[in-house]
Amino acid sequence: MKVKVITSYKPGTWQQYAKRAVDSVLQYWPHDTKVAVYHEAQQQDVFQHQRVEWFDLHKVQPALLDFKTKYKNDPVANGEINEIPNGVRRPGPMPNKGSFQWNAVRFANKVFCVTHAVKSSADFDYVVWLDADTYTFRPVPQDFISRMLPKDTMLTYLGRKNPDLNDAGKDPECGFVGYNLNHPEIQNYNKDWEELYTKDEIFKLTTGWTDCSSLWHLSKIYQKNKNVKVHDIGYGSRVKGHHVFINSELGLYMDHFKGNRKDFNQSAKKDFRPQTREETKNISQLDYWKKIKN
Image 1 (cartoon, rainbow, N blue to C red):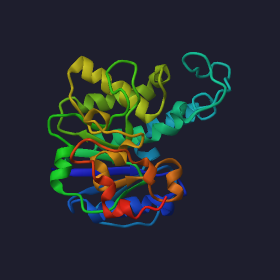
Image 2: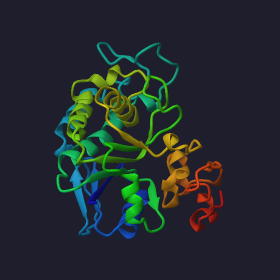
Image 3: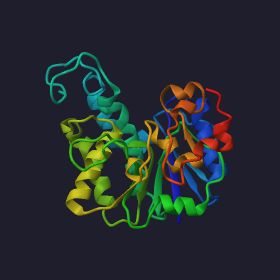
Image 4: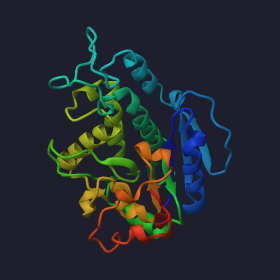
């Protein structure tokens, strides 16, 4: 299985955590794994490696730049609540404060990183999105990767609470998502995902405008209308806990220090929940996790 791991990072965070994430993939994933790093219209950081390729996201995805330029001055499209004449409107009553959950402009970057990689990686079997605030802390076996990325499913993701196909349920955790490039529907899905933004359909979603919201919205459509199979390695695999990434089988090899965990460059002991599956019930006893102090 040929896998390309892709990621992106905000300006100023390369030395803080993103370089560590890329280094750890190069060190611990199988040595034929390629890495693509997308940067957002800034001078790329100096990091040369034969298995790493760099992309200026705005140059390779001009439609993204068009979307961001169109809505950069619209507070509602950026997660705020101040409406402007002829601007974007949230569905339902406007709350009292803004929220990242409705920041379509910010999270469009991640979507267009993925869609570019899916369109341009014909020599690979899977594209895997990995957030730049992750860390692989020990060797990842090839058979584990093959099990996480089945040949008969279109997507692999970390489902969260109530992962049903109705409008209820919580968006997946998208720090790790696998895209099967050999699936017959993946390019159609990819095109539809971009068009949520290029045709302004993202603003019709009723549960949020993040990359997780749009992925969840579209994957449900494909599951219901096209009988596409997905691989839920989170709640759909009986994983328990708010921090579904480290409580899933991914926690056997990787950490995801999302949110304020970046201040410590690791997750916390309190993030773990007792698991019932044999594969995951002893994750917290690994050497990496036992050394965590907070």
